[in-house]
Image (cartoon, rainbow, N blue to C red; front, side, top):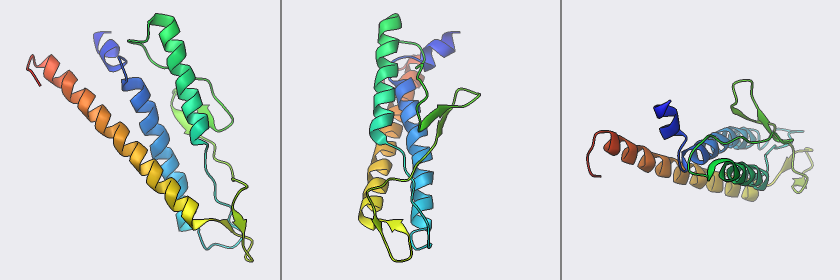
Length: 147
């Protein structure tokens, strides 16, 4: 029980959820890049704002439950985010309507796609760096060393 309290303390659950979202979204974006010139292909994506709203609500609920310092995040499924049978985050991407429809009936926008890839990569990198830092502090505390 002590390990569960340590791994669900502070920002770790939010960082884990962010890493899962960014990792799964990267697969969706990579699929879009791979099919950029495929006729009749419609790129898909998930709403970053929708994920942020879901994460914010889960954090607010955790704060209301126990002061926000510990405990896992209990989030609600949305149209794009669903809860797997194991409690894991799963994405249901959809086709955005704002892209340009080309003569081969491919709905693409290279600049927006590359921007989404760059922003998602940056979000993943920041979350992983913060998680690595938190884990390092926990390891140092468990080893009774000063970081």
